Amino acid sequence: MSLPLDGLSAIVTGAGRGLGRAEALELARLGAAVVVNDYGQPGRDGSGEASATPAEEVAEEIRAAGGRAVAHLGDVADHDQARALVDLAVTTYGKLDILVNNAGILRDRMIFSMTEDEWDSVVRVHLKGHFNTTHFAAAHWRTRSKEAGGPVYGRIVNTSSEAFLAGSAGQPNYAAAKGGIVGLTTSTALALAKYGVTANAICPRARTRMTEDVFAGFEVPQDGRLDALAPEHVSPLVGYLASPAAARVNGQLLVVHGGMVAVVERPRVAAQFDATKDTFSFDELDELLSPYYAQQPPNRTFAAAEVLGLKRG
Image 1 (cartoon, helix red, strand yellow):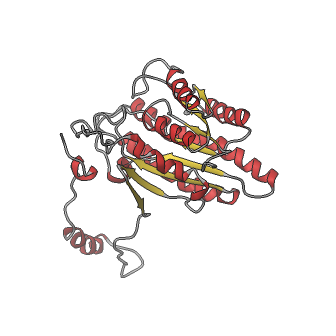
Image 2 (cartoon, rainbow, N blue to C red; image 1 turned 90 degrees about the horizontal axis):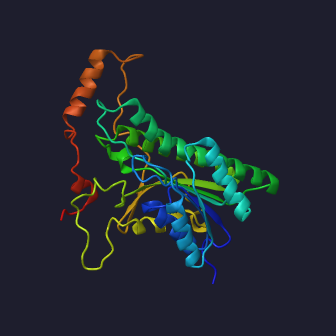
Image 3 (tube, rainbow, N blue to C red; image 1 turned 60 degrees about the vertical axis):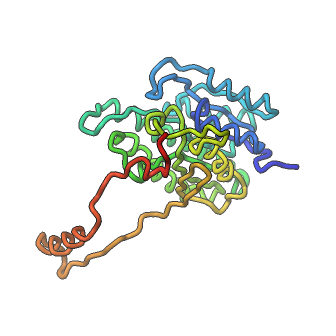
């Protein structure tokens, strides 16, 4: 019996731990040959010495289960290393079919305290890292499509966050990068559709070393049930989006966690006001907008429990 991803090859970045590990294992379980990428730094802020161990351990886990996998130690935010990552997939498996961008770091601070380096480093790893791998994968698919004289198989799954959707007061760098990833995804989806390639983004909720502070205090089931925040709840959606079954899914943003998938609509106009003359005056805007906003519920920051629908232990 064939598997959904038989004959396909995949790259998963940041796959040495957490979400990336679960995603790499799921793609392999579904039949894909996987390049397991991870820079292997121990600090979630990108600190510490790089190590091949996390990626190698996941690759070995895949091989032990009967799958195919190779490890790649590389910083996807480095243009040349991202090129080498895509080249490794192509030279090892003959082609690249699936790219899952997951690698990231955190350097949290309020906007008035954040340093330039804290901003640059997070945007670099998340947003530039997504761009770098996408750039080389897209070039690979475009070349193959031209050689084939028609569409080829290609899937991109990017990792955004609800920090972009709902805001996150102490993560202006992270929220901005994750918002940028959504823009990158929709642009890529439009650009590559004619080559047979789809690009989608997910906003996962999962308990990993990146989110250990966010989910501190939320109870973990003690009765053998799978944790609602386990990365294993996210990886099946990645497997689906990477598969032929998702050929009609393109340029989409999906929230996923704990047995739930939500399709996010693109922003819609909530209200429209037209000037009585060629352009608005200050007074006219005041007369129209101030009463409108006075009738709206006051803005408030959602408590984590409200947003996540979780209980504290």
